[in-house]
Image 1 (spheres, rainbow, N blue to C red):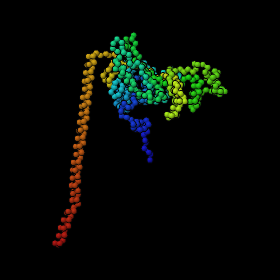
Image 2 (tube, rainbow, N blue to C red):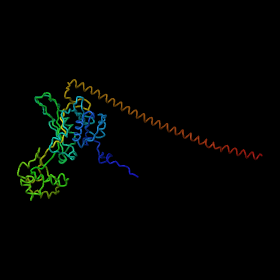
Image 3 (cartoon, helix red, strand yellow):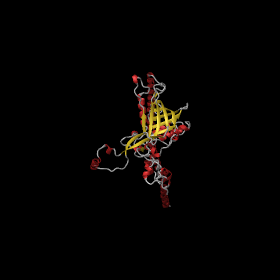
Image 4 (cartoon, rainbow, N blue to C red):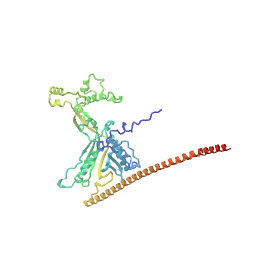
Length: 453
């Protein structure tokens, strides 16, 4: 007999399925996003590829294999956001005028930031412009480090009103910071930070009055690489060769060839060797964006207090002994893509629908704002009244169903009693139909007739 199939991918507790220890508190979970194409067959292949690049950028906390249908609507995604634990929705769409729009919404209550994608470059285009490609699957196992710049504008001079409200700037900062899980500098290992997402706000120029109230963001996505500094190219090649020993043969051509040399010193110091050594100061310099000091990564012996005191007394308490385990590394950023230039056009309270908190092109007076508040208060009261009526109808139907079930149960019990009585009557008729009483009387009459005869 074949054994029943055991699910190993989607059931609770599986490797790729939901775990039993998932907390019900949304604040204790890492943020999850869904990057969606609204109107999958109408936005074109370029925007579809941009959506895929954004999904790759948002990994691992995103639905990277999401497939949209032309019949899907926004309410379909918002309805599934709660059960799936999705906290953010990134919606790409194209307007009738041909503009590409991006909406960043927080579920389930908003707010929603509306952007117009003025310019963008795909990851493939960025990769083709680079001389040396970089990127691997390990870079996308952890969320990128978010770096924001100029999100808060300086205070205006001479008491003038700012073009962008301060509460809008703080709201935008909070929304983008909530896209990725927070990190702790004391607990987060440096080796887990492999990517960085840069958001830079273009400050409006005083000479351009048309862009005085514009809120423009530039998005860049980089990979972080580090190399040890202070070493020549030949020494760096030796360090790399140690890592290439166990790799396939096609990568071993990068290893230095020392077969024609008598000593390792010839490789390090002879200018005519395959890789020149310390003959030029420029060869020890690495193309870098910055240099940092980090602790050396390696196993260390755990010492008790007495051993630590003896070691300090032996090594001394100078600055040189304190920095013995520190090494300098060169940090270089390699762009992965995509690039986007986003222009904020509107901020709404709800999820893609609600009271407009700010608009780039429409400015309302105080009277218009009060009138809008009255309209939204009326809509909110009507919505609460509809919910109350719906709740009352549900309770009424539930009571009617319960009453009908009780009536059905009572009628079934009465019917059962009637069936029992009918069965008793049928049993009595059965015994009478056998003719036992009549046959007995007939036997007595026959005996009396024989006696008389």
